[in-house]
Image (tube, rainbow, N blue to C red; front, side, top):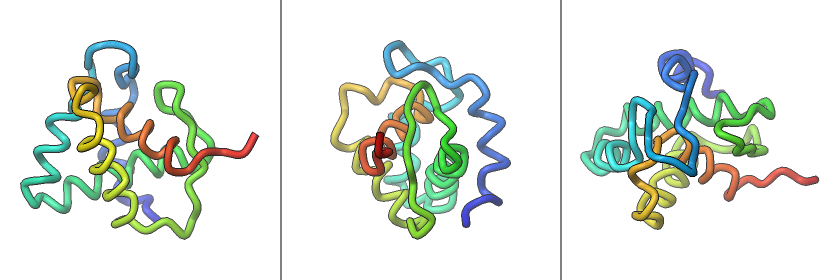
Length: 112
């Protein structure tokens, strides 16, 4: 599973920005996208995995909830996050934690 990566980033997620307002989190969607596109695989994977690790047990991040299957790979999580950032340029000024959580909620919706 992804637990080791979560500790470092989880502290940054204590008060992530809401998707409805400007970013007040440590990293914006634009910053994360730049990191991921700069072939910085470690930080990019780590961020996506940490968000997934927080959400995997039904926890929400800025009201986003995802049911991420245990079989999801770290590469798949990164790809979902990067694709969401690429496809939503109008949202990149928001907090990265909220945007990645939205990406996972869209990719892995929970059944009612």
